[in-house]
Length: 369
Image (tube, rainbow, N blue to C red; front, side, top):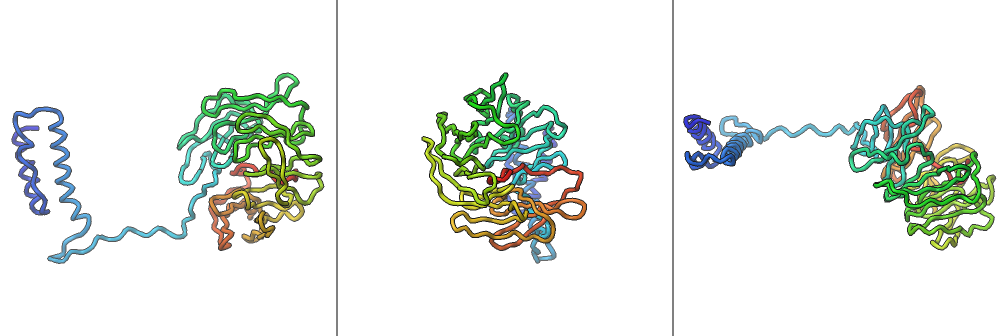
């Protein structure tokens, strides 16, 4: 910057600052003997501050004679625009989680609590490759590539999946971050390919699976125990309990709390369902087996609330905060609806066509295959 230009800038900003009633820039800033790089930064900062001081009053108001008029208020948010969902979903090559949108080639989701896993290759019948949502980015999980029926702990610390070595089927547990194998537990009996057997984690980090006619659990400390369920068998898992059934024809299922030593205590009954989504330990939304209707069930009171969002078959997708998300069949596709059980208000989030895959993670039921 030349000396003359510096002096001209000083005079210009002094004049503008005086008009805006802010102090002028100090001439000492342009001291001739100071040639350090930091000096030029200081000049730029003070110049920017002076310019801002002049610009701010203009942005806040404009003058009309001696009257000061307020600046126009920002346009209000359009109340007709639907909010997003906390419940993760995939559509048009993008993962949506709340306000976060990420491009992805994944075609399948696994969601446990706040943990989100994605796999690619399922629709084409290929070998799945896996990744997970870590912060606001997708992180590859190469140690899971080729695995099926992957499940993750609520805190995201470990993941588990079936592995087959020769004729032996095992439950394998990996550290999510490092990919290191934490544990491998071989099944005593080969599982039936027609029935699910790896049930998943509860919110205490315990992993449940079926081994022949025996129900087993791996505690958060890594101990494997047999559950004392008698002649009952697994029908599903909830955040805080397991679902037990007397037989496949049961109309109701038993919720049971499990201690770390494998002892089981029955707590209450829940309806048998083809799909169920748990908001917390006490509230679930489910699809009834016989009618296909969707209801919200209070475990503590046994009360049920039917979900009515208009004509069209419904499917449960999950919970987004306190809103239940359902998918309603409509002409030429499906409508995703967020339903508030307290107010019974509903809002359409988006629609997708018949040629588009189901955007949400699949849900297990409470006993019904």
